[in-house]
Each structure stands twice: as structure tokens, then as C-alpha cells.
Image (cartoon, rainbow, N blue to C red; front, side, top):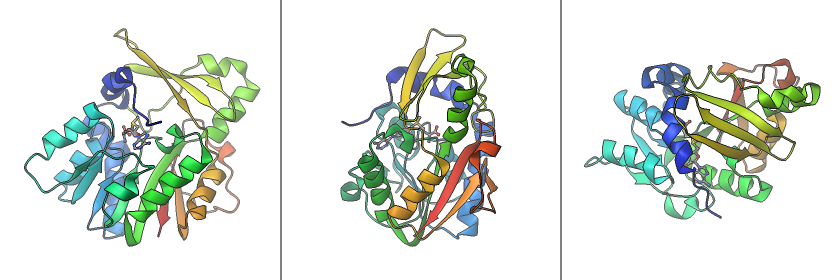
Length: 257
Ligand SMILES: C[S@@+](CC[C@H](N)C(=O)[O-])C[C@H]1O[C@@H](n2cnc3c(N)ncnc32)[C@H](O)[C@@H]1O
């Protein structure tokens, strides 16, 4: 089955993630710092969405290609890069090794994306393919929510599933609430509700644990993995406990090939 973001979700996504300028602060500048630190010459955004990160990196003069399987999201990048040498791909992560040529110093997959795949074999396949298109050395920057904490909180308080999550450290929009209606170790069902328009949609997501995600990255062959909590480096990785942080924490992993 090929994943497509439901049209209702694409429609409210801009209001959910907030204005471009704020997104640059919560995401774009952090990516740029990594590009500069690793001296990356080629970047692939492997889940471009609205294309805000692509736009920001392009404006900073950083060469970037785009992959996006959802037509309405992809059109934004196609329009932006019409007539330029930037390549815009339309490739499922589970098959992309056949369609996206190798050659990237940094690949980003940000926005709690891999969690769309529930099957472990598919998660591994996607990560293998993401690794395959990287140069050697090269790095994958990928993130996910603090599901460890979300699972703990629902155990402690059943009312948790009627309370919207506070995402403002990553998504700065004020017009869309996100409520975790169902939370089990196999599935988290998020309810996206526009507060001013009659638009709502659900996403079913696989709740990766922090350690589990790092292990998947090691299993597909990444040699070292740096991890961040809301972009702050986690220095004591051996003893790190994700339950000490809030449910609104996003973990970013920078996996090196
Ligand atoms: C909710 S959007 C997030 C987009 C954007 N990076 C952001 O943070 O706003 C989820 C993204 O995952 C991508 N996606 C989900 N499953 C995919 C798959 N199997 N192959 C390729 N892309 C996939 C979608 O195309 C979409 O870009």
C-alpha cells in the first residue's frame, strides 16, 4: 500500500505548522547549522511537505533536491524550482533506492514522518533506502515525537486522550489542535481539528521509542547516531531517559554513514 496524506490534512497543514518565518526558527536554522557543520554540498529533503525548509535552504544558497509523494505538496516545490536544475522526485521511501540517484551529503526527513509506517520490515526498508542514496560520508537527519512520554501519560491519566498536545516548539500555528484520541504501544491515532474551518482528519502513527529508533538506525548500518531533544544535543546517551522530558519533545537523530 502506498501512503498518501489525506487531502483534508494537506489542506490544514499550513495552518498547523504556522508561518514560514517561525518555521525557519523552529527548524530551518537548525538544519542550516548542521549543513554548515558537516560542510554538506548536496542536500535532499525527503518529505518536503509545504517546502518551507527547502525554501529556506535554497535562499541560503544551499543546493537541495526534493522528494514528495503527495501531489499537492509536491506542486509547491515543482513551481518553486521550475526551470532550475533542482530535481523534484515523487518516490516512496520503500522503493526510492531504484528512483533517486545516490549522491547526497545530508538527507532530511523531518516532521514525524517515518512513524507513518507501522511494519518493522517497512521501517527498515525505508531507512535502508534513505541510507543508500547518501554519499560516504553522509548523514540522515530524521525526527519523531516523544512517544515514550505519550505512552506513560496515557497510563497515568485516561483524560490525556481528550487533551490537545502542545506542539509549539516545532509547529507554531494556532489554528489547528492535535489530540491523541487513541494511544497504545502499537498505534497512536492523532486527531487534527481546524478551529475556524470545518476541516478535521486523523492520522494513525507508529509510536517509536527513543531507544528503538536509534537501534533501527544502527541496524541498517549507520555507524554513529547523534541525538537531540528539541534540537538540544543529548550528551549522556547511555543513561538518557526520554521519560524525564515532556510529551511535546521532538527527538532529532543525525545518523552518520
Ligand atoms: C505530515 S507530512 C510532513 C512534511 C514536512 N516535512 C513537515 O514537517 O511539515 C508527512 C510527509 O511524509 C511523507 N511520506 C509519508 N509516507 C511516505 C512514504 N512511504 N514514502 C515517501 N514519503 C512519505 C509525505 O509525503 C509527507 O511529506
